[in-house]
Image (cartoon, rainbow, N blue to C red; front, side, top):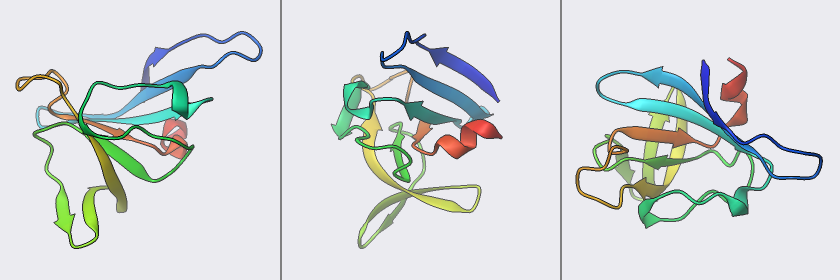
Length: 110
């Protein structure tokens, strides 16, 4: 796993990290962790941002395949089901159209 972005933190400052856990031509799956989830804003076309650590939620790109069930939309990864709360992309051909961001910091340890 490669960390692809991290804002360094001084004592008491907020930082966040994205870790690439899968990269293929079809999708790029990343794990996410932050010290303050409410301060991290992503370019979303729809939905909302993460609000708490390890919420089991996902933000997906417009072209990522998900499962739409009666109680919501889900993305399955490594035998875990993540509730989709947001969709990346403020443009139709967004570079994030195949991106998946999972709010599960345990994935950063793998």
